[in-house]
Image (cartoon, rainbow, N blue to C red; front, side):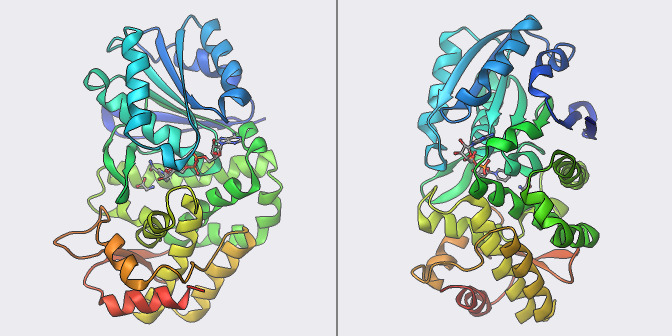
Length: 364
Ligand code: NAD
Ligand code: GLY
C-alpha cells in the first residue's frame, strides 16, 4: 500500500504529513530521528485508547522511548481547562523536560487540547499529531491551530503551535462511526468549494466509494485535502488573509455549535449547515447563482450531513454568537463567501438583515 509524504513548508518549523495504511506500528521509527528527548506523553481519550493506544505504545517502546499516558474523557464538552490541567498534572508529576514530546492520539478535540498543552508546558515542548478521525486528518491536525473552548464561544483560547510530524493511518477510520465520518466529509467538501472545483466534481461522482471507506480512495482524499491545507498554511500561517478561507461556514457553524451546547451538533455538522447558509448569503449578495447553492446542498446531503438548522435558534442569537467569532474585526462580523465552486473570499460590512435572511432560509 502506498505511503504518501507531504511537506508543510514553514522554514525551520517545516514538517512532514505522512499518509497511508498501517502506519501506527511505524510511529516509533519515524519519530526516532526527529525528537531530541526520549519522554513522550501520549494523550488520548477513553474511546480511542482501547482501540489504538497499545499499538502506538509498542512502536514507541521498540524505538527506545519512555511513555506516560493521559486518557481524557471523550467529547467536545471536555475541550476545556479541566482536561488541559489533567494533561499538565500528569506530565509535571512525571518530571517532563523541555526535550519531551506530547503526542496526540485521537480526533480534533484531543489534538487541539494536546497541541495547546504542548505550546504551554515549560513554555513549549515538542508536539506530534496522530489524528484518528477524518476531520482531524483532513483539517485539524495540520497547520498548528490549537486550543480549547470557552462557554461563550468555540476555540476562543489557544495558540498557533506546529507539530514536528503528522502521521495519519487510514485504518483508524474503519472504526469511526458513520456520523463522525460524515462530519469529516464536511471539511473535505469545504476544500472543493473554496479552492478546487475539480475536486468538488470528483466528490460528486465518487461519494459512494468514499462512504465505503476504501483505502485507496481515502488515501487520495486525505492527500488532496492535506495538500490544499499545507499550501494555504505555508502562505499564511497566522491567518492574516488566505487562511481565513478555511473558515467557510465556520462563523455560522460555530454559532450553531455554541447555541446547541457543545457536542450536540458535531463540528462538521455545524460547518455543513453553515456552508449552506454562507452559499445562500453569497447568492443574496449576487456572488453565485441559486444552482450553486443547490449543488453544495446536494453534495452535503449525499455525504449524510444536515443542511438546515433548528428553528429554535433565533437569528438574533446567531448574530450575538457570530459577534464573538475570532474573525470579528472592529466589531464587524466577517464571513467567507463562495463565488462559483472553487472560489471564495472574505467579506465584512454585510448587513445583518442579509445574514439573518440566509439563516432563516435554512432553518426548519
Ligand atoms: P472528536 O475529536 O470529538 O472525535 C469524534 C468522535 O470520534 C469522538 O467520540 C472520538 O472519541 C471518536 N473517535 C476518534 N477517533 C476514532 C476512531 N478511530 N474510531 C472510533 N472513534 C473514534 O471530533 P473531530 O470531529 O475529530 O474534531 C472536532 C474538533 O476539531 C472540534 O473541536 C473542532 O473545533 C476542531 N477543529 C480544529 C481545527 C484546527 O485547525 N485545529 C480544524 C477543524 C476542527
Ligand atoms: N481549520 C481552519 C484552519 O486551520 O485555519
